[in-house]
Length: 308
Image: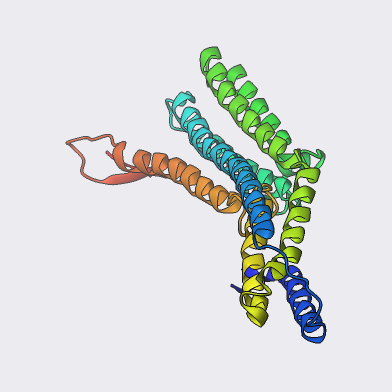
């Protein structure tokens, strides 16, 4: 409640001050007729309700679109690493191949973190220093658009893998299609971030809302008297909260509690990707054995124990 009411504390203070001033004026000037039909503020309130409902729906559509986009990022990140793990040609189960896959997983997690930070207008390299090696970190710092630079590093590693015959042309095309979908999702997030909700529309709603609050005490003066102070304040708080809710939802990347949870999603993506790499390595460590019935002892080879 402290957070919610804190968003409209200035508006509520002005409403309370206006209602008290109105009641003081009515007390000292009882002979002056200042009442108006309650139907007038009622009509204006109905119009405001329709406008706020439309604005809230439009704002929620922007928020929900942002959430759908980040859901696609989750799926495409998992798909990317699955393709890297399965397509990468490594019949000898080398350490180099495991390092390549782990590096790809960390870099993709870094892409998610950097994209979320960039959308919130924060330093995109602050949270990814532990996920990139020195060369990659030095490369992305030279670019203003860090997530795009990370996708370039993905593409360069794919080209090297193709040159070294670790993947074939068809596999490279499939992985590149996944990178393209990630780039599309990045562009959609930037479109939502950079597209401003029409300012005049918000101004008209605020003007109509202020007019409604000003006229409401005049319509209640002969009905409830001084009780109009808490009643008008409560009604105004409801309308202002709906307006603030719509304003916050229409900008889902502003680092507010109502935002799309890009940080939490990025953490989940990192956990999923690292688990995919570790599970692959664990399966290799546990299931690959060579057995000889004449000897019954184990011997470590390449950090993996084989039964000889």
